Length: 347
Image 1 (cartoon, rainbow, N blue to C red):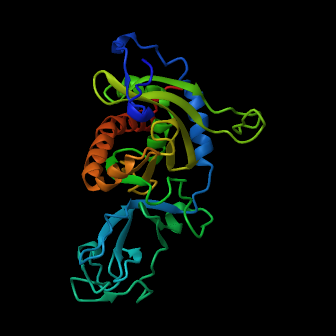
Image 2: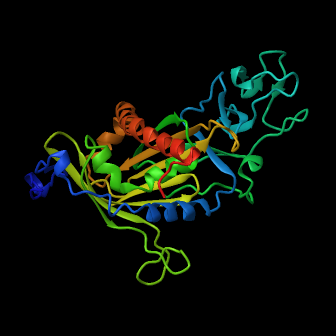
Image 3: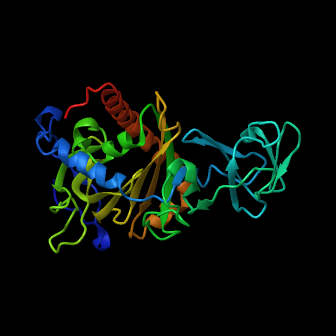
């Protein structure tokens, strides 16, 4: 990389000129990407509690208005809507009267009204219909499904640390693949594939430090404290010759979530949250999983205020970038599931 470009007033450009390397001339990463390291990180993530909370969509998708939002999680139909004051409600998506799909009903003055016979639900228990706990964190909406999660329930989901509200620009992309949540999480816990599988997005990727694991399988840092992060140095491609180098950490705070946080370089504190939500039952022969990815970009540059003002224009571009990456990564996750399900997965 070339040095920083300094402009008037000491301003420094985040862009660097990339000394182009042919794709095949990259340093191979397969030796470092040891299957046992990825499998152990996946196992530790799966052992962490999630309190039965599942991400169902973005806060913007569940709007106040006359239409509810429907989602199936773990084979359970769910309907969500907002009351007149914007408070989210969630519950079974099957009408307790004659089984109508409540996702196709109407919201009238904050009350969900079934379109088959007019049964009205205000979000409280009614005729055997019991609401689900729901939490809107400002970017994503979570629903607690105790029968699906099978864990000790928690009052609130464990929302990853993000840039302070109002200081970032958030966009959410959702994709669906034929795989299980663990296949999505395994993909994200393999940072070594980035520059090989996504050369249009990443270059010069080095895993500076994988998790440090103690005798009992716990990840430890130099002081013996928990350190279950993959530390990665990578450059994001802006054009054929311009890149933005950063250092990032990948962590898995729960069994269905992986968080990438930029720790130094341009956009420090920005996060990419990948949430894997099962759509089918655990016993399904052909499982389907929704990948809900939230990108919350932030910067301490004074000019970033303009980016926040242009958020309505930036969000579609951010979603498009996530969609392109997940077009490839869902193929990766689906391939992993196919091999696992037929006993052909290596190892």
